[in-house]
Length: 214
Image (cartoon, rainbow, N blue to C red; front, side, top):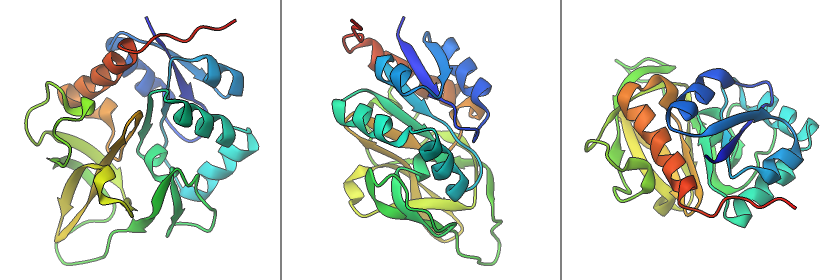
C-alpha cells in the first residue's frame, strides 16, 4: 500500500484526514520531517485556521521547499481547506506571502443579504473539470461540506476543478493541475462523496510507481 505523508504543522485535525485515507487503502503517516515528505509516495496538506500562522508554521519547520520540490517532481499532492489557500500568492486574511505555487489570491466573501459568513455546511459542487481523477465515481455536482470565510481566486481559470455558489458569488471550490490537487471543502466530513474523493486520490497514487528509497 502507498505511504501518504500528512503534513503536521499544528494547523489541522490530522487524525480525521488519516482515518479517511486509511479507509481508502493508504498508509497515512503524520510528519513534519522534510525527509519523510521526500520518501512518501504522496502528500496531503490539511489545515484549519488562519492564513498567516499556517505559512509561519510551515516555514519555521522548513517545510516550504520540500513541499515545492515534491509538487515539482510530479508526486501526487492533495491540499485540504487551508491547505488549498496557502498554495496561493497571498490572502486578504493576513500579511504573509503564501507559497506561490498557484498564481492568485485568497479573498473574503462579500457581505450581502441572506448569506452567512463563514460559509458553513453543505453545498453543491459545479464541476469545471468533470474528467479530473478527483471526481471519478462521484455523482454529477456532488454535495460536500464547507467551513470557510475565504476562497481562492486563481489567475489562470483553467486550474479550477470545481466551483460553488454562495449567495450571488460563484467561487473556486477545488483546483487540479497535473499532480497538484486541492479542495476548499472537508472530504473527511463529506460523507460518501468525501470518502470517494480520498479513495480516488489513493487510487491515483497506486497507479504511479512507488517511491524507491536507497
